[in-house]
Length: 314
Image (cartoon, rainbow, N blue to C red; front, side):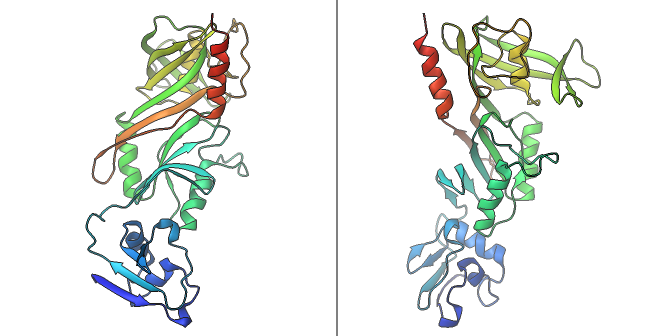
C-alpha cells in the first residue's frame, strides 16, 4: 500500500484516528497505524497529523490521506514541549528524553506503590497516544532534577542500556556544594558499597567483591563566599555517587541530608533538597547511531539559590 485517501462515513463518526487506520481494509494493525502517524505519513483534510492527534475523533466527511512514500519521513521527531504533566525534551518512535522535576521518583518503588513517579507520568503520556508502556534505561534520585531517557521498544532499551553499561554516554551534572573544592578541577575516585539496611552508600578502604569503584571528574564553575557551583561528569554511575563523593571530601551538596559528615559545614545554607541537577545527557541513537545531546536548564529553585549565594559573595 502506497498513497491512498478515504472519506470518513457517518457510521465511522467519533472513531479514534489510530484505530480507524488500523482497520483490516486500511493498515491492518494498531502498530502500523501509530508508526505511520509518528512518521508524518497521515493527513486529515490536508493537515499533517502527529502523535498528539492519534486519539482525535474523526467526523463524517473528513478526508484521511495516507502518504507512505513521503520524502524524509523515515523517522518522525518532536520538539520540546510540556505534555501530560511532564517536560519532554525529545521524542521519537524509539525513545523519550524527559526533564524530571525534583521531588518525583524516577520509577515506582515496591515499598511505596502509591507514590507518584516520572515513569507513571510517561506511561500516561504514551497510553494517551495509543502507545506502549515506557521501558526504563537509567534513573536519578527523587530529589535530583534533570534529564532521564526512556525507551519505547525492547530493542531500543537493550541498546541504550548497553551504552550505559559501557560508560559511553556523557552525563554532566551541576551542583552547589558547601565550601571550595581544592584543586578547582580534578577526579574523585572512591570504593563504595551499598548498605541495604541503611539504604545508602558507604565508603570502603579497598576494593572487594562487595565494593565498586566510583569515578567522577569535577570542575568549579563559580565560587561564592561559602559555596561553589561545580560541574561533575560521571565516569561511573553508582547510586548516590555524586552526593557521597562530595560529602566525603568535606564539601557536601547544599540541602544534602544523608551524606554529611563531621564536622558539619558552616555556615548552614538552607535549601529544601540536594542542589543537584542532571544538566546534560549525550548518547548515540539506538536505531541509527547518530549522536544525540540534550541540556535541561536549571530549575527555578536552583536558580534562586545561586542568586542568593551571589548576593553574599565577598
